[in-house]
Picture 1 (cartoon, rainbow, N blue to C red):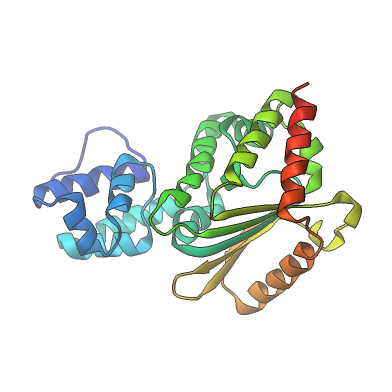
Picture 2 (cartoon, rainbow, N blue to C red):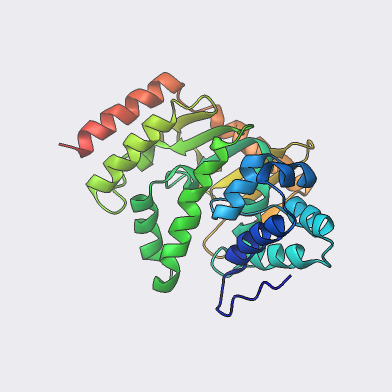
Length: 271
């Protein structure tokens, strides 16, 4: 089947286009293709509309289903190697969508997956090349869709209390971000707890990090710093990060106290 559109497309857009075209050529509905690819129908819809990126498992099954020699796997590899996402691409495109439990610690900012577009844009405008800002914002805010699926992960977010007093972008942007965060705490799968500044939290000041437990029982961590970042399933690294997370969580506020802190901060920044 001919898939050359005669104009440049990103690997992600090409994957979405080609999947839809091969599916239609095979006279398959999205539901029928989902059965062949062993995934939920909604994932096929999200991939074809660009809302979600495919996993390596979907790429491999698509190649087998359509009798292709690595076409979709090659596209997946290009997506994962995107210079805009860099090392974090694997976490966003492959780990988060397959997670059963997500845990994160953020000492400076609201977790990326819970950020509003304006809050994310304010961060990227200060840290990213101008021609990459729009794509980075779009990728970041799209991550919240992981909670829309039929089996959303449980997310436990620990955040340093200092984010309540750090007006990223402007007081208006921060207030809107905090309102958004408060609304998200009502989601049955999302728990947010602040860690009080008074605790000191020395073991958490090194960097933010995230943990994921996947459906097959394996565990993966991501850690970021100004110079480097990594995603790894190394058992020793996972054990160290889990120990640090448990230590930080021991100082976290109860959910009710966190909710009150959010409400107080929203009032402060909307005066």
